Amino acid sequence: MERRVLVVLPHPDDEAFGISGTLSKYVQEGASVTYACLTLGEMGRNMGFPPFASRVTLPSIRKQELEASCAAIGIRDLRMLGFHDKTVEFDRERLDSCMEELLSELKPTLVITFYPGYSVHPDHDATGASVIESIRKLPEADRPLVYCVAFARGHEEAIGKPDVIHDVRPFVQQKIASITSHRSQFQAVVGEMKLSQQEAEERFGTERFWTYTFA
Image (cartoon, rainbow, N blue to C red):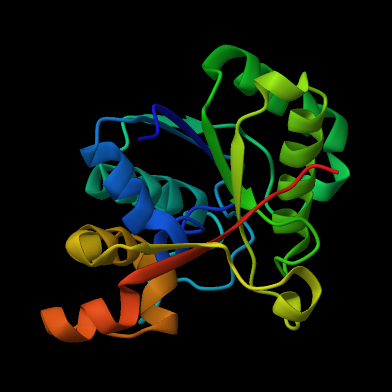
């Protein structure tokens, strides 16, 4: 059983589709889960459907949505680190410093982040790269286990198939609550979320991770 889990992702809603079931499982098992979210998604294009946000109001709306998602998952330790959306890759020195401080403070047994180079968005890749390099600096015996999320085109040809697949069907309702908390985002992508329990389990019942191996 994991004892201390640190999640590092750049945008509100990054946790929802890919890992919220796993996080719900860890919370229920008694793990301490910290979610470090780098930005408030200020540059997001989706404003709800029909639109209810504006460029001015979007950061505060996405902050509220993130807090609601964490409440649905059961996360009590949410850190909002104050980076700006779509600029994470240009703020690497500060990002590395933040990652090293989090690792020193929390001493996680498991870290979850994006697989650098295989996560599509520059913010995702920069976040994953900083996490990996910060952990690499730790003495080998002190390094936590690292699970990465990957979904870039051709990623399985490059890094192989995921070696960790979690059955999160018992947590699918928490997962749907996490997804639907991000109303400004998911409505434009998914529309109305009206699924039976069976449909929800088939669609959202597994989550995949790659264990990062330090060379």
